[in-house]
Image (cartoon, rainbow, N blue to C red; front, side, top):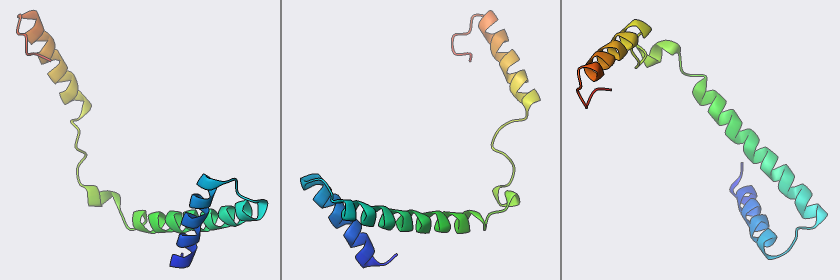
Length: 86
């Protein structure tokens, strides 16, 4: 999107604060917003399209059995009266 188009979006936003936009200005704003959002979506898709699952490595969470084991340990600690147990 060109700088002039972004400047026009900003100008229309300022005008809207002062007075209601005319039907022609509303149509122009919609066209400019649609073009702006289309560009953002295209950029995000292209950035996300470069990632592969293996780029992220191992998941940052523990497997389910380890999580359950740590829960059981916490329950044992609570039963023994330890206050800091989770």
